[in-house]
Length: 272
Image (cartoon, rainbow, N blue to C red; front, side, top):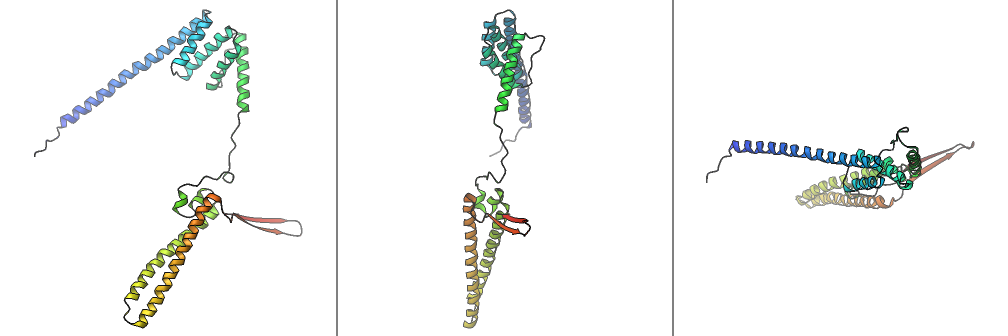
């Protein structure tokens, strides 16, 4: 069966089509964004005009509708909240107006009103809201830094990989490195003794005299027993490391205190 060769012109056609599609999406998205911004500006103009005309209730309703009907930028939201608060003050709803001033301060804590262009009544409500906002900020609990000794990370996958790794991750470096070194030494010894045991076993089977076989068997038996104890030591270290990662088993620290006759006391403590 003959295979049809790819036509380079088809790849070029796909490339051109993709470029034009991207340009089309960009050209369509830009007017859409501009339309959204223009609609938001026109809504704010309507809210402002209603407020300046004295239609405070209508201005309040349009501002609430503007804030609830769409997601707007922080700058537009601040303007809408501002005219909403102004309209509420004009209606004598100072408590509700203060809540919307605080909503503005949550977005921009440095927000201020012009002292000469804003009515004293609105300024008084805004100052009261700003004092409430600052008192709430001061009363918020501050999180204090927690040191590695007061908060130990929970054990993770490092626990099952190798002895000592999880202890090092928890910040208990002394115990971690001791367990890590002991694990490496015992496991390395087990692997070395296993190789030597297999070699001694092969030599034992290759012995051609009873005397040589007995001698080589003793050598094989020594490696076998040493490998057994080395592996047992590694398993003990491994299991100890597993439980210690969860329960912080002893030894946890070791202290030596020296005291002289002049009430001079020196304490040396090694933390595991």
